[in-house]
Image (cartoon, rainbow over all chains, first blue to last red; front, side):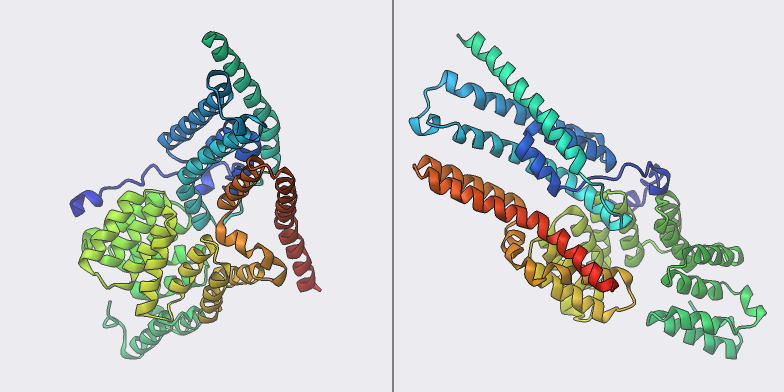
Length: 167
Length: 296
């Protein structure tokens, strides 16, 4: 790229922090781990997406966060239906732990990807704002309890529908 | 910039003021400038030096008015435009900052400092690709310029690439072991990768080199807290990272269960939970206790 092209203005639409809604401080990334672990992909995605708006990330990044959440949710449905279609080895079906753990790992992978998307925007925010982050305790608990339960319900309904059609 | 437009006695004072500016003694700059004649106030360089000193003292509103007064004397003065650009950037008014930096770049398009500063402004708006290309251009023009390495370190940090931050910071420190920014950035990247002890050393050195900088002294204090003996049990967790720790714990629990050691799995789960509770409870309690001690 020529130097002249690089010297074309691209900051003219920047909205100064002072003119933005200061009530919308972003959340940290570490706290989102617990939401993914205890709640699953759905609550983690909702929180990550809301955070992307608070960080004023481009829409494309927001869509990537949603896409990761949808993939994570589909993986959870897949894991829930797996025992109904495939005869799994005994050590996998002797307790619910292996499949539960697999579901948690899927949610953590979704979290890892969503974290990667938010990292840069959050660092820019912290570097230039020198500002504290919003607490994720309240929204996180609400997300885990309500959206986590919603995810359990939706996964069961989807698994039931798929298994019903499979018979 | 020259001091040729000043009377000889004033010129020596201006030279002294510029010297104090370069060694980060802004208050002495203001003291020297306060003794100048009213005739000197017509020279834009006076306003530039005064504005820079106020900027270094974080008196941004006064610096802003000073720079604007200087520009009313000489609207095309590059250093004043650059100063005003930095002041707008401080207010996060990047549109105005960009307009001003581009104006100075039109005067001197191959100036690596201006290119790097523009890259930093873009970084402030998360336009990291364009910022990186600008720094590459600056590096092509002045490969060994210290500001190029500093800007590379900053952008790598904003991109979340801590390995690159370490690489650039070490390069800065190999050129100048007393560079505060190099120690600060190396400390920040070490902290992000879980090496809190290494980070504490770097921040401590940065604070020793620049004791007047509130950001550096604050982070050095914070880093000292992280290596408190009560937090030593958490050092492996910092080093490993939360996500790796949790995935490792899940794998161990599942493996023990699947191998038939259910009791060992539940003991491990309880021990691990205790460790997690320790990591959640002890740091805030310690912080509260230490701040209470400090206020006594």
